[in-house]
Length: 281
Length: 268
Ligand SMILES: Nc1ncnc2c1ncn2[C@@H]1O[C@H](COP(=O)(O)OP(=O)(O)OP(=O)(O)O)[C@@H](O)[C@H]1O
Ligand SMILES: [Mg+2]
Image (cartoon, rainbow over all chains, first blue to last red; front, side, top):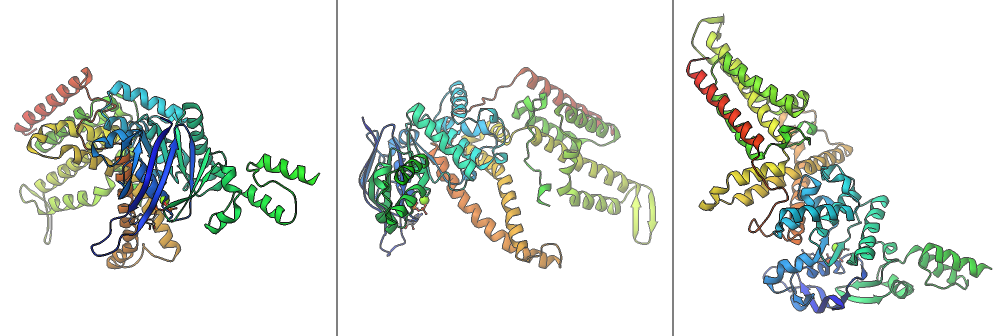
């Protein structure tokens, strides 16, 4: 199966009071997420990113349409645990997703819920902590760690379920630059080395540069979808959606407006520098 | 001010006191409480104080941390002491000064009551200092497991308790932040009458409650995402198992309790 998650004409309206007309937060999303890919989801506030994320592991169930995780329909309650075990979720605030007072006990939470035998839990906890580079904090108290470290513990907590896919909903939004870099490096490594499928929701354009695919949402629908180069070179459409472009593209775009012949798709800083140097010669 | 709250704080370590099964520790504290309430005289109190001292020694917990735990109950201790001191009739009157009268019995009661509360609090705190909250609630859950038959939601209660304990430091930190924010805008928490002070707390409590509800909501979602579905079919990373040291500790504790009860029959 090439696609791990498939949404079909997905629509969702949050429940409203009697008499009010429901407003759709998602209005027809068709999205297939390839196994092992790194997908970044962008969109301004209220565009439906978090709603979409919560539908991917059955925290929310479609009002219309369907979500299939490895062929399993999220609307089927009997498959709930199987789906949640396959698609792990990391949220914005690290403090509000850590359950236990000791790091290893927190990481063990998910396998405990799944009824995994103790020796196997031990192995998974050690492996997950190693995968996020937090092995030496096994018996620490989470509330004494830095934001980036807490968020890596949260990722380890999800990894201990041995999921196929991780969804991160603005997981770097509350972190300082160092913490953000730690978390991103961890996620990229998991994607590269373990073939983990990653769906990263973010407001930081730079985090999208290394992705395989960028999906832009607006008003509950997917409006752009493609490789980072394909998406970010559409500077004007992005701006009209209230989004910025990466600094490199912004610079190149301005140079082009001033008549300098540079390509727009040099996303990385080095690439961008080379492109400008070439144009100046 | 908020730093004083030590309830539920855990100081990790690797001593025998830390490694004992939480159920053993809970039972030992229960034994200790029973013994304290039976104890009558100097001999039994000395014995119980000695027991605590030895346990503190074994656990490597600092005396200062233990004493700091007494601060929140200082008022109750003074209140009990004073009440007993002045209002217990019996025995010879040591001081007679107008309406104030301190009897021999009163002095005796006051001293022993205060001692009893002190030992009680320190004994309980020693347990929470040496036992991680999770294993403590785990122990409680296992000890009370038989109550599930009577439809008592033991697992849910234990989970609630461990989450409450987990969030104490987070909420304390948050309260500190809110207080600083209010102070920066000129709020005054220190001066004024009691009513004014209470009023000054409202702008702290409201945002604290709102944020606590938001946290609870997010935590519930995060727990669901990690496949939490109640206590059914749940396994544990650390399986509780009584070891030789637990048996020894329980026998020793039980013997001391029985000893104290017997001695107190003879008024010791
Ligand atoms: N619990 C809720 N109840 C009702 N409406 C909601 C709820 N959560 C979100 N919405 C609405 O659904 C729409 C999409 O919200 P969503 O949280 O998915 O956006 P988002 O893209 O994640 O935004 P942000 O970047 O701010 O996180 C918004 O219009 C929002 O007001
Ligand atoms: Mg969101």
